[in-house]
Amino acid sequence: MASLNNWKTTLNPFYKTAYKMLGATVNPTLFEADKSLKQVAKEINKESKFEPTKVAVYFGEEGTTVNDPYFKGKGPNRTGCIYCGACMTGCRHNAKNTLDKNYLYFAQQLGVKIIAEKEVFNVTTLDTNDGSKGYKIEYKSSIGKKEKGNVTTKAVVFSGGVLGTVPLLLKLKEKSLPKLSNCVGKNVRTNSESLLLVTSTNKKSKDYSKGIAIGSILHTDKNSHLEAVRYGKGSSFFRILTIPYVPHKYFFGRVFGTISVLFKHPIKLLKTIFTTSYSQRTTVLLFMQTLDSTLRIKLGKFTKMKTEKEEGEVPTSFIPEAISLGKKYGELVNGLTYANFTDVLMGTPTTAHILGGAVMGKNSTIGVIDKNCQVFGYKNMLICDGSMISANPGVNPSLTITAIAEYAMSKIPNKSKKEQKE
Image 1 (cartoon, one colour):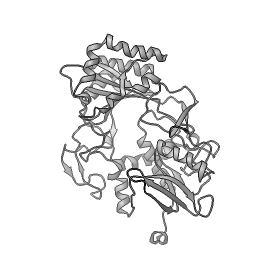
Image 2 (cartoon, helix red, strand yellow; image 1 turned 90 degrees about the horizontal axis):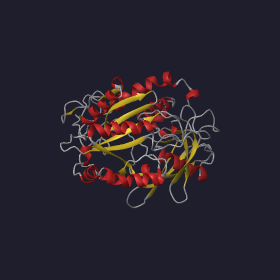
Image 3 (cartoon, helix red, strand yellow; image 1 turned 45 degrees about the vertical axis):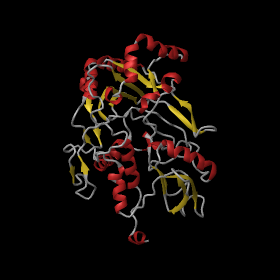
Image 4 (cartoon, rainbow, N blue to C red; image 1 turned 180 degrees about the vertical axis):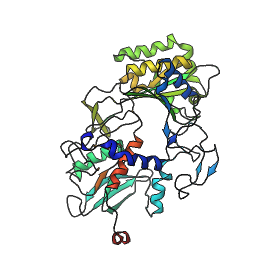
C-alpha cells in the first residue's frame, strides 16, 4: 500500500474532511483513569508523551441540547457530553457523533433508503461476468424471521468491517464472484494489541468510569501506545469473561499461576470479584503497537472462520512492555490485573482493531483492491472499511478508514443531470 501513493500528502485533505464530518475534537477534561495514566507516564519519564485524545464527541455544555453545531444547522441537534463513560456500549445522551448523525443522516436527506438489520449473503453480476452491467445483491434478516430480499444496482461497496466483509468475500469467491483475488483473507493484522483490566481495591475507590470511553493516550515510544479505556456505570457483564492475568510461556504455568493468585492475594481477589461497583473501579488498559505481523483468515468447517499465521511473529497476549505498564498502573491504584480468559489460558490476544484481509496492491497477485479501493476483476465494485488497511497504525484506525473512504469516493465521477433524473 505504501508504494502505491504518497499517502501522507494525498490523504491530508481527506483527513481534514473526516475530522469535519466526524466532529473530532480534543477531549477537554481528564478524569481519574486519565490522571492515573498520566502518573504512570510521569513515573517512566514520558510525561511529555501523554496527551488527551481527539474524539468524535460533542462536548459543549453538559446535558444541554443545541442546534446542529457542525453543518451550519443542517444536521441533527446535539447534546453536550455528560462524561458517563458509556461511549462503547452506545451513547444514550446524543453526544457521540455516530454515523447516523452525519454520513447516514445526510444520505437520507438526499433520498437514500437505509435497509437496516439485514445481512448480505450473495452478490452476482448482471448479464456480464465483470459487473459492468451491474449487480444483484441478496440479503436476509439478521434478526427474527429470516426473510429474504434483493436489490439490483450499478455499483456495490463492501463496508462490513473485516469480520463482515472478508468471510463474505471468501464465500462469494467460491460461489458467484470467482474472479476475486486469491489474496482475499490474507494480510490480516491486529494492531499488535494487549488488553488488560485493572480493578482497584481501595476502600474509597475513585470513579474510574467517569469520562469518555478513551480520554487519553501515552506514546511510550515510536511504535507503542497505551490508552486508558472505561465503560459506564453498570457495565459489569464482561468481568465473567476475565481471569487474573498471569503471563507465562507455558499453558500449565499460566493455569497454576492463576490458581496461585487465590493464595497470594486472596483479599484482593475476593474484593475484585464481588465488588458491586465493577465498572467504577476498573480501567481497561489498551496497549497497541505498529510492529508488524500478519495472519490469514479462512472459512472454517465448524466455525464461521479460522486464522493461521502468515508472516512475522505470532501475535501474543504477553507483550513485556504491556506487562510492565499494567503492573505500574495496578500498583498506583492498588488493583489486581485481569485479562480475557482466552488471552491467559490460550495465549491468544484479544484485539479491538482487526485490519486487512482485502488489502490494496499493484495487481490481483498481491492485493484485492487497487489504490482507489476498486476490486480487481470487477467493475464498479469497491471495498471501503478496515479490511483495506495493510499496516498496523498502532492507534484507533477509524479516522484513517474514513479518510481513505473519502479519497475513494472522490475518484467516482459525479452523475450527469440525466443520470440524476433517472
